[in-house]
Length: 193
Image 1 (tube, one colour):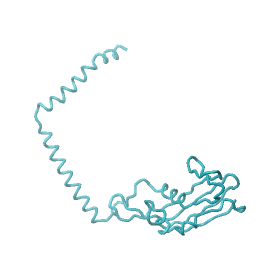
Image 2 (cartoon, one colour; image 1 turned 30 degrees about the vertical axis):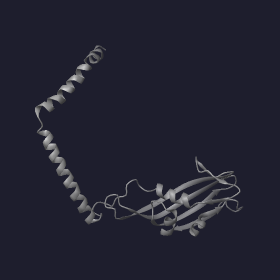
Image 3 (spheres, helix red, strand yellow; image 1 turned 90 degrees about the horizontal axis):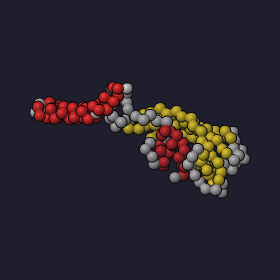
Image 4 (tube, one colour; image 1 turned 60 degrees about the vertical axis):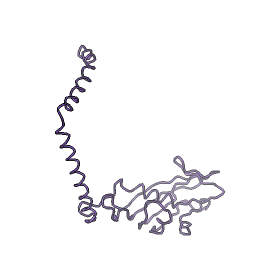
């Protein structure tokens, strides 16, 4: 957990405003955070835009993360670039609800690690898929085999229902007619207007 001390910023420092902090984030960072992202190579720059009672940090991250492809499950490298602003103020108790993070004044340190991770994770697209033709061939063959087996079974079921008895079909038609006759009075009222 020693690496996470790198991301702590002293909010009580008199020279914080205008300061810039740079972090090179690698696999060890993602392993310590213990989130969904496990690998990556990202450069993050944190600039303190204002200090005093309220602190505004601009966090810019650029680089790549490695995630499993949603289609073939093999590694997929995604390019990440995000710029976010984090509002922080000193208070009595820690709170990260709302627009501003409150850090206890007695503690006086802000741990940026979790915020950097969340900004990176939120900048990722909803789906993570290789470009067409770039997925793992063995997995795509297996997926294709299972899809063709499933669609063949569905075709057999559909064929059976199409060859159903006339009674089943007329039951469906009768129920539609019954529903229409219930609304006939309402339809007449509508037509009068």
